[in-house]
Amino acid sequence: MRTDRPLVYVAGPGGFDAAGRRWHRHVCEQLASAGFGVSDPWAASADAFEAAGRLPPGDARHEALIEANRSAGRTNATLIRSAAAVLALLDGVDVDSGTAAEIGYAAALGIRVVGYRTDWRTTGDNEAAPVNLQVASFIEASGGRLLLGGPDVDDDALLEVAIAALRAG
Image 1 (cartoon, helix red, strand yellow):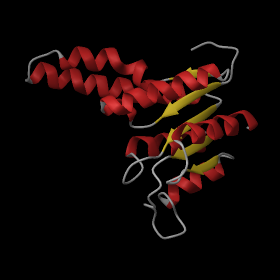
Image 2 (cartoon, rainbow, N blue to C red):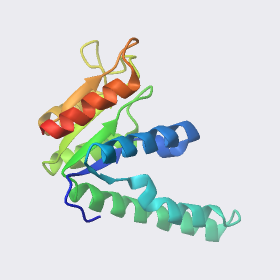
Image 3 (cartoon, helix red, strand yellow):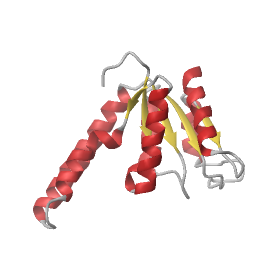
Image 4 (cartoon, rainbow, N blue to C red):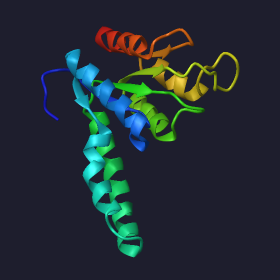
């Protein structure tokens, strides 16, 4: 994606369900409204998965899904490498494994990661770790921030703080 605006890769498990897709699209729209270019891994790989999903169960579908998986992995790595920053949604009982991998990859490349968690349950390795300690460590090592919501924090307000953290980068 070519843009003069800072490009933000949006990591998170949002594409797996309807509510997640709505929130993911909302995040992408808010980033675009804030002046960022948006790198959306879900949109980048949708066609291959939709085509594979239309095939009847069997070998052809299985092979098409294998290729869609490989293609999505390559595409996501390329999108991360071209990003100025990563915005990662960390909600859930545990941070999504794909999101954790994207955070680690970006941090290893020296790309700043802002992680935000609207889910206020502590799910880390001990009471001082709100998320998996390695995920938090990669976010901090990237020069990014880990932002945490709470029972009285509006999800959109936390997203605004995350966008401000991306700007401050």
